[in-house]
Length: 254
Image (cartoon, rainbow, N blue to C red; front, side):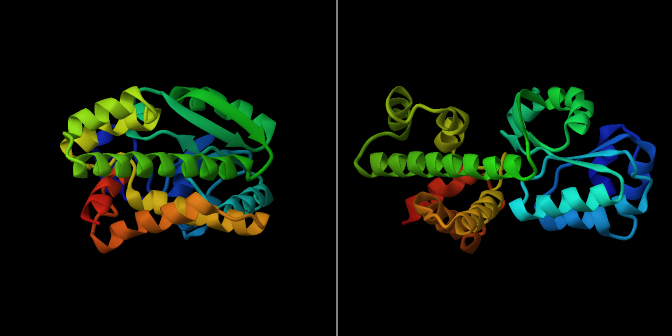
């Protein structure tokens, strides 16, 4: 949302979202939350102020499931197509085109966007119905957050019991802890370098959205609710902008 963030990319920079959509058939968004997405769409100089008729707006943000319904309707009313396309994965797979992409939206718009989605994703799942892709992303992050917290807590217990950290991680990798999450975060846990790939604050936000989904489904949310409060503890420790694997530090302090 700030021009200075794009200055070192060596690309043409539009003066506003309106100017961007007026000059391009497809626009991608990747923002913090649904409030940010709404701002880009509706603010003065936002997408709706531009020539958006017939354009495809691809949103890779992890949104609130109710917000995407609104975005679909709002852009449709202005003659544009909204594609919700939240991704599974963070910095490393994004850099190599290895993300998993979940997609909901009109088939024709998806077909138009797919060649670009294939540049960032190795696996693409088309769920079609509005909000399904977003709901599935939140469900995925229930597993993501739970795996990370369980691995972190197991590591803390191993250390407290008198074992070397590296040895505990090796044993978890060879045993029940073996997972894509541990493989991705093993080095961070070992070195305690929690420079962000996926912020703890983002996972906290996603788990809050998931609680709202559980409420609409009238289902209890056991592990997700506990995990949300655990990641919420990063705020009081000024760790919310660190990688979500920093939950290890929260548990170690306890």
